[in-house]
Picture 1 (tube, rainbow, N blue to C red):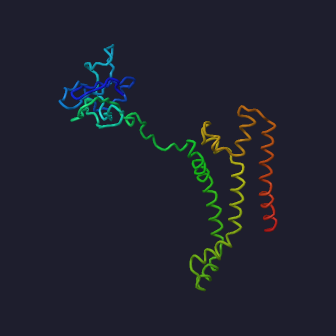
Picture 2 (cartoon, rainbow, N blue to C red):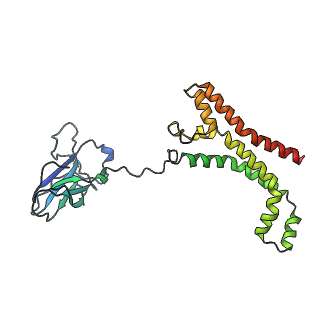
Picture 3 (spheres, helix red, strand yellow):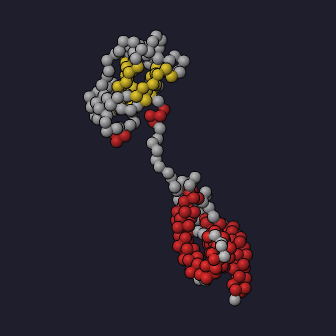
Length: 261
């Protein structure tokens, strides 16, 4: 905000420093000091920097105006009375402001960061990103196994169900899925074991700053034992816990194999 109070007929000079030349819009023109307007307040917003020196607070040759800057006009109580946007040469004007004193200020939206896109590896989306990567890696395996199971289903059973009047949904639910159940079980158990011991995808996809949000048991074991903590006792305990989680799934898988034999 400009500290000096303004009245009708005043000219406000809002020089900004610390702005890189690359941040100045391409449409910017040389800054000029606008002429006073009776009953109004004019001004200019410009990049107050001259190569080789210059006088701070004065519009000099070679200095560029800043277009598209939101300028607010505030009354004595600090309330916003009007708002405008600067032209290509940085000038702006408030007409018929009335009596009293005012101050000009640059709107906070001028300094808001532009939209930087979606941070897929940020703290809020790292878990979905890891899930998508995992599905992408293992979807091919699951599809090949399921396709092999579908190819092994006798076609005469499907035709018999259709001949008896079953709809396609009833054929799928009462014939295809039960015949495909062993294959689906193999895929489910395999994916369950892989999910319990997943490590490489998480450490490869998640940056170190967000690994706490995407942490899994295997990654916690590795980080505790080898990633600077060097607590091998706790790391071993986590490894044993992971083994105990996998054992029931392995036992279920072995039992199924024996039953099929």
